[in-house]
Length: 267
Ligand SMILES: NC(=O)c1ccc[n+]([C@@H]2O[C@H](COP(=O)([O-])OP(=O)(O)OC[C@H]3O[C@@H](n4cnc5c(N)ncnc54)[C@H](O)[C@@H]3O)[C@@H](O)[C@H]2O)c1
Image (cartoon, rainbow, N blue to C red; front, side):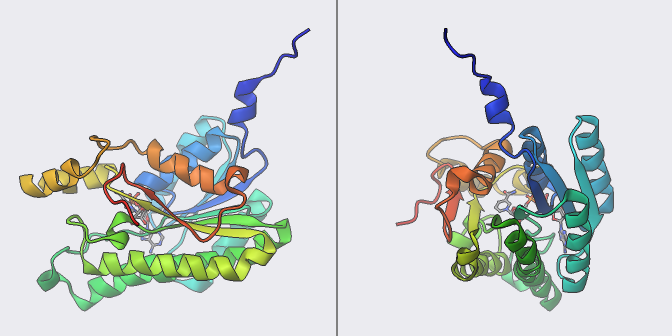
């Protein structure tokens, strides 16, 4: 007699019993990543500087029957990060995965003559130091669990010149690639993998406004440059993150995964 296999529970519970921290987890991409992990059985801890947005995503996850905790924290503040991660690790019973998505251009101008010193500091500090602070802070918990996966957020704008974002963003997102590779080398012996994801343009609510404000020629530079010929869904950014977090990528570390519909193809 054929054995009955419940395929849906096999695929849906890939992160059962796993604790996932997501910085920027209340944002456009981060909240989709949180939903996707919860759908696959994971428990999520959200670290974000926007308390209202944290409350909204936590309420949504709780009402769907999932497990989620959240804390307001500025990822630039290493002591506050350590404290928040310690609290979340207690609530979640450890840390298996870190997704470091807090970042972006953060409302700073794109064009050189409009960028202030404070704008430059903000973009470099949140993206680079924030990623460093959170990654360093989760390592002891991952060592205790016998391993883990860290996914950092670069960008197509850190891989090649993009018309959408400016010089500070390009510098920060390129720096995250160096951080990712160097860290991967250092923590590999503890079965901790560190990989970067480099999304192309994903139209979160906020970026949709920005995209609509771009000139027709800038818009078509982006759209015509995507061989797949369409804008992606947010899920198409979350799914590759889940792949890097999962056992399916167990021998992959120190890479950058470009998720851009072919708009930028590195050699
Ligand atoms: N959306 C895109 O097209 C795109 C493309 C490439 C890379 N990315 C990267 O993906 C990540 C998520 O982007 P998004 O589009 O969802 O942006 P978003 O603005 O919707 O989300 C970012 C989140 O980070 C939080 N945040 C900002 N500063 C913080 C700080 N100091 N401490 C803690 N949290 C802070 C914000 O409150 C927000 O919830 C970013 O790193 C961004 O650079 C996005």
